[in-house]
Every structure is written in C-alpha cells, then in structure tokens.
Image (tube, rainbow, N blue to C red; front, side, top):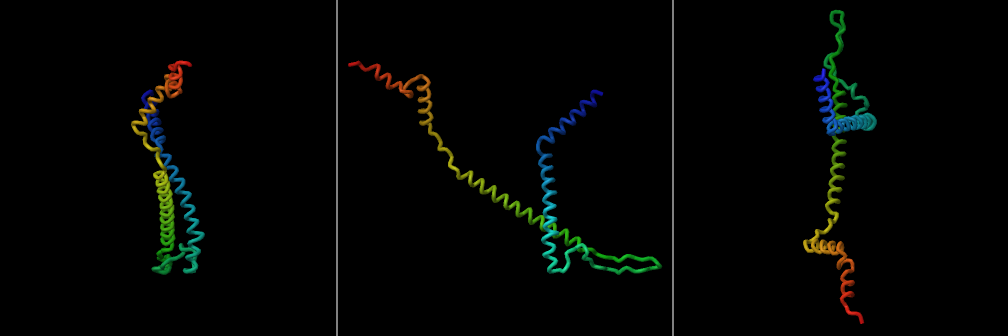
Length: 167
C-alpha cells in the first residue's frame, strides 16, 4: 500500500512540476486565443467577405455549389441518388484558410514592427558613462576620509585652524 501511495504522489509531483514550468499554461493560453481568433475570422469571412464575393457570383452560400456527375435515376424500382461533387465547401474552407493566414501574418508583422521599435528605443537610450579607474579611486578615498571625519567633511579646514598660532 505504501508503495502505491508513493508512486501516485511522485506522479502528481512530477505532473505539477511539468504544469508549473509554464509550457502547459502557454499552450492553454494559445488554445483559448486561437479559438477566439477563429471565431473572429469566421465572422469576418461569413459576414463581410462572403457577401462581397456574392456581388460577383450571385450567391452567398458556397456550400450549395456543386457539380453533378450523374443525375438521380430509378433502376429496378429503386431510386439511385445523384452523384455530386460538392466543391462549394472546399471553396469556403479555402477562403477561411486564406483569411486566417493573412490575418495571422498581418498581426505577426505588426508585432515584429512594435518589438523592433521598442528594441531600437532601448538601444538609443544613453547609458551612464563608464567610471574611470581614477574616479573610482578618488571616490573611495573620499568615502574613507568621510568615514574618518577627515578632509572631505571639512576636516582640512579644522586642522589648518588648529595649527595656526592665534594672534
């Protein structure tokens, strides 16, 4: 019994490590956004592009477009259905594919353009000038003297006044 419980806990622990890495969360976000994007593209094709194409073709429902190879007939008292190639669905799916691909390409180009501008902006920001070795040493000396109450805090002035004979 103890062995089975340990295996289950190890499996759950291993699964949680996998899920917490972010791979699963990134995938979930991609699926959700892809589904939403698919709905937008479907609406774009159905509500905007297809009616525009129907001006030229005279039909808004591509799925009804067919090519009949053989008409329905009656053979031996039984009705044989027509043999039809339904190319309208293929046209609709192809149109959806082109619009999805074009939309993704446009969003990708916009994203790359924005990212490139941001990278250029970050690259053009002036960096702090590098501190020379001499400046570093002088800063260290100043800090040491300040800590000792020496010259940097006005100690030089006090030392000079105390060494002068009073008149």
